[in-house]
Every structure is written in structure tokens, then in C-alpha cells.
Amino acid sequence: THRFSGRLAIVTGAASGIGFAITERLAAQGATVIAVDRDADGLARLPEGIETVIADVTDPALPDTLSKALAGRPLAILVNNAGVGGGGRADETSAEDVRRYFEINVLPVFMLSKFAVGEMRRTGGGAIVNIASIYAIVGATGSAGYSTSKAAVDGMTRQMATDFGPENIRVNAVAPGLIETPLTAERIRTETWRKHVFIEQAPLRRVGMPGEVADAVAFLASDEAAFITGATLRVDGGWAVG
Ligand code: NAD
Image 1 (cartoon, rainbow, N blue to C red):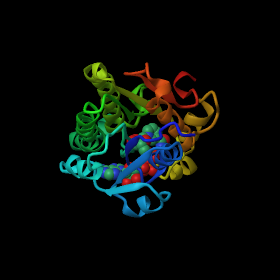
Image 2 (spheres, rainbow, N blue to C red; image 1 turned 90 degrees about the horizontal axis):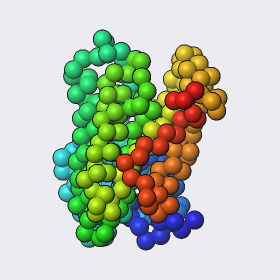
Image 3 (cartoon, rainbow, N blue to C red; image 1 turned 120 degrees about the vertical axis):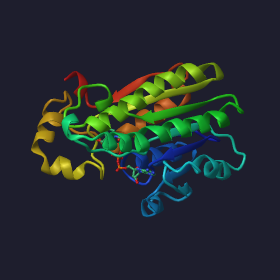
Image 4 (cartoon, rainbow, N blue to C red; image 1 turned 60 degrees about the horizontal axis):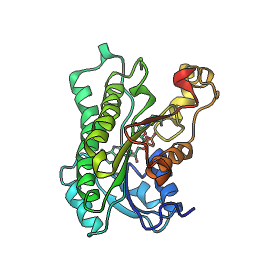
């Protein structure tokens, strides 16, 4: 249970859903966690002892803010989880919509990973885990902007794994299937096609829970994954192969 004792982690999008569960999990396993989100109320619901930074991940000043929050302490783990979902078919999606998905879901992952690498290389290594999506991997009808942005995160994971592996910085991704969070709960209840597609066509015949994604993230961030980099771990109840 003290897998991460003495290690400091930054988790973005920590105020809700999957990021909240990741923050709780890493902290329960001994990590000091700096939780980043633009939602101050959600951050306030995290367990005691978690450090919080109220910020938008698109803010170009965020690396400076995080540098101050670290206050010289070594950074071991970065989890790039903040993201927005939704969207429509490609012929109903404007270039502006696509740009917005890239600004929120992709560029902050690039910027914060570069910041993290700068910190991690001073102390001999670290682990970055990006939250992509099963929609980064399979055809994602009705999700043009979102799936394209998550595919970029998935590709960036492999790219950075090659650049930073020689410095013992591992970069991996988790690709969740449908997980019940505030982002998706209403749609799971009301959109029967979604239930049909994601539950009846998934070998495990159910949606996932945030804690099940957190377990996969904790594994990839831990020493148990010491020889794993550039990997994308699907956490989807087998949906992609169903
Ligand atoms: P959520 O909406 O419950 O939580 C997302 C959190 O990110 C929120 O607290 C929100 O405030 C924060 N956030 C969003 N944009 C931000 C910004 N610009 N700056 C700072 N914080 C910001 O969603 P979730 O379902 O927990 O999703 C978390 C991640 O998992 C996302 O990247 C999402 O794309 C991905 N994902 C979710 C599912 C799913 O089924 N829920 C499936 C695949 C991938």
C-alpha cells in the first residue's frame, strides 16, 4: 500500500471522475499529490492532505505555477487527465471545434509533459501517464473532434517515449472505454444507443468505474511497469475487441 512513498505526483483534471479517482488512489498508496483543476469546488471535495492548484490547463503560465508548487521537491509522476468530451460527426464539426479540442485535450499534455521532463531529468527519471480514449484507437462515429484529439495524445505518448526513454522517463497512456463519471452519467442513462453499443458489445457487458482506470494508471506509474514505455493500455471491458 506504500507503493509511492516519498514520491510526488501531479494529476490534472483531479476535481471529478477519473482524475479524482486517480488522485485518491495515488495518495492512498503513499504519494504526495498536487491536484490541478479549474473547478475549485470539486478540488475541495478531495481527501485531506492533497495539495491543490486551481488553474486551467490551457493557461501558458501553468508550468510556472506548478514550479512554485513543487518548491524544489523532485517530481516523480505526471498524470495528464484533464479533458473535455462530446462532439459530433465529421460533417457536422467545424475546424474551430477541432481546434478547441486540440487546445484543451492535446496542447496542455504537450506543454505539461515538457515541464515534467525538465523536472524529472534532474532526479534520474519519472513516469508520465496520459489519459487517451478507446476513441483514439477505434473508429469513433459521431466524435470527430474528440477522437482526433485523443489520437494525437496517443501518438504523442509513443513519440515522447522515444525522446525521453534514455533518461529513464517512461511515457504511457491509458485508453478508457465508457466509464461512468459526471461527464458520461447522464448520457449513459438517456442515450439507449450508447448503452447498446458500450454494454451489449463489450465482452464484460458493463461500463467501467473511475477506480478501475485509476488502478491501471497507478500500475503504469509504478516500478512494476519499469520496463513499459510507449504503451497504450486499453481499460474498456474488452470493448475494442468485442
Ligand atoms: P469529468 O468531466 O468527470 O472530469 C474532467 C475534469 O477535468 C473536470 O474536473 C474538469 O473540471 C477538468 N477539466 C476539463 N478541462 C479543464 C481545463 N481546461 N483546465 C483544468 N481542468 C479541466 O470527466 P472524466 O470522465 O473523468 O474524464 C477524464 C478524462 O478521461 C478525460 O480526458 C476524458 O476525455 C477521458 N476519458 C473519459 C471516458 C469516460 O467514459 N468517462 C472515456 C475515455 C476517456
